[in-house]
Image (cartoon, rainbow, N blue to C red):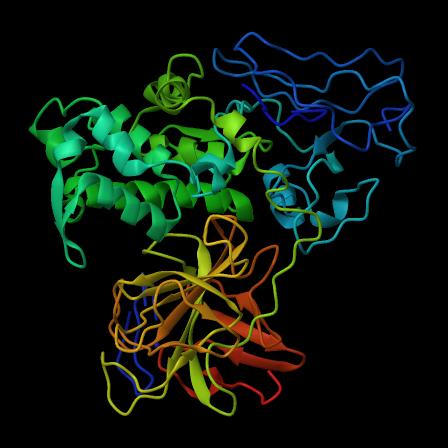
Length: 534
């Protein structure tokens, strides 16, 4: 597979914004010896199931190469020989080490978790930090704790990260035109949705792609692969009602089925990012540990298909030449070629722009929700909730103002959402973005307006998503990817750094020796006041 990233071896409100009533509201939101190259080798051409890249001979005992147990769908990749120019000296590498080149989006704690080692055990010729993304191509030397008696998933990368999230690779993709030209069942499909009433199939795909920041090409491919909705028609009544085969009365129709699918894709993608996902469980109860060198996009895809299929079915679906990867390429061309157009998806030394708390100085709000799902119930833990003091319980439009946390261009305004594009290019698939959710229609900042720091965004409410009390829900994106609130680049507001709790919605804001603890009831320990200088 093209660009199978090569290496020398092969994470007042409960779930949604819930809860109990208080004056603060309640919320539901949804060295082989001789030298090791410091820089990674050039990516090989696209691999076929029989391609194996062989390491150059060495005379001394090399580090152990991590090679998953072969199956018909497993490939082992090792780096081609280094160039003739001697590479810079590197640290001594103990025998039985894994030599791994960092991928875009890698974070030291997550890499350590995937390989089953501690952060302190990973070394590199370059300085490493537990904070921030590791620069792509950085050599990591990792103790080998891989059990040779366990069969792992394939190390073959099937889809780029940028084809799973709503990234710049989809900027030129016209959903409506594609669906119309395909001429299948989806082209005539309509569905009644609460906030957009009767909605066409293409409009539904567009809405759910933007709201969840999931690539629309992938949604269409899954819908067509499982139920022939895009270029044909469903085979029976069951696939008409439940196109993805997930039988649940809450997920009837295309929108409901894709909502479930996105939850699964996001769980796999972002749990791999955070290092909390280690294996897959299939419909037949079989389990399969994941190769630790996979990319988040591939794991998201693997995770999704594992939940509705047996292991044998899943192996067929994951086959590069005859399964879903080939099907996807048949619909939309080479995804790796599109991924190559994005340079430095997470550039070196990426940091969050300066952001303030989303309310005025000298005003006290409650920190009612620590890191929880950015959108829906089971998405990446990228969002935080804040509530103004209410003079009544439940849902209503607060007279308080949500303020712009950073300057930018309004690229979405509606259905309770305001999306601010900080680089001002008009695309939320590029650069940093801030999402404000539950923003009332009354006085909401209009589409296309530029806002400066502290400009009015709108009033807190329950509008958009699911909420049982007035508040505002905020989350960040970078290049279309939700940024985990307590991840490589933590959510920092007016100097307050987010620290996650043991469960979603728990957590703290920390500033020096001051700590604010999230609380669903808005109790004293959750109250926070923005300083005058912020």
